[in-house]
Image 1 (cartoon, one colour):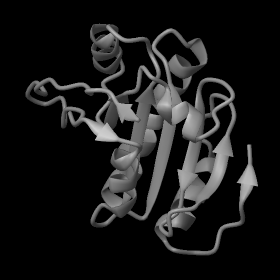
Image 2: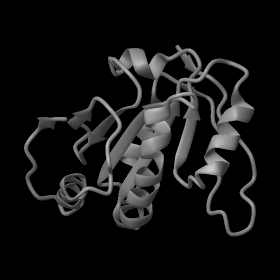
Image 3: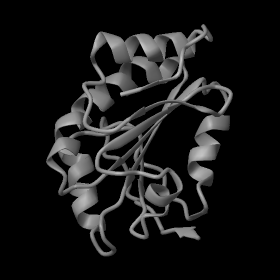
Length: 164
């Protein structure tokens, strides 16, 4: 299966890095994030531009990335918007000033592979590559509970597996 051509546009000065543009088979962009030099944890977020809860949680994901990205947190947000909606996704990214990696998966391969049941849905993947937490709805990623989990993963302290 092919994760379709993703979003490519140059970042304007001062807007931070632009989302990476690649074409990937299966989920190598997520696998690459897990294996990235210095990566200690990965947040995979499956979302859509039309999803109001997705819109509500994006600012807290960006805040989490700005705080913990330099310490080893990778974020890969996978849009499941329909084919031909790349302009909508670009506008969404610009509106929310997102600086982490944004992928577009109109075939919904990621949703199938990760057994997503609704949107948004997020997965915290630990440094060993296993899913440490699955979140079934919009979350406040600025909450102390979520920040504690990320801090523990980045510090390589033991974390128990939990859902929601």
